[in-house]
Image (cartoon, rainbow, N blue to C red; front, side):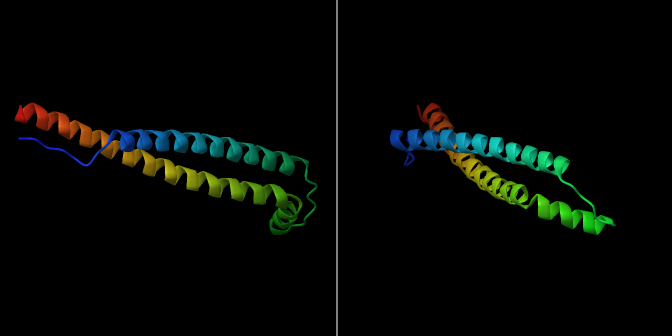
Length: 111
């Protein structure tokens, strides 16, 4: 019994390359997100907040740190996009590995 799946060396290499690219993009997005969080924390620590109540102080802090807040939001969006792409690449890579394993098992069973 011979089982062949529509799987080529080029497809295997492409899936491996996609996973490597996705890992790199995710790593870069993580670094940028961490940096933006650090920048926001730094901006908060030097902001001059003079509101009378918590709502006014929060509003003033958001006004003074708006650039850092926007940068962090963009970085978080990029991180989540990269994470989804990485998970998809991992799933595709895993499916190829399982196909290869199935071929090995079927080859062993079929002779």
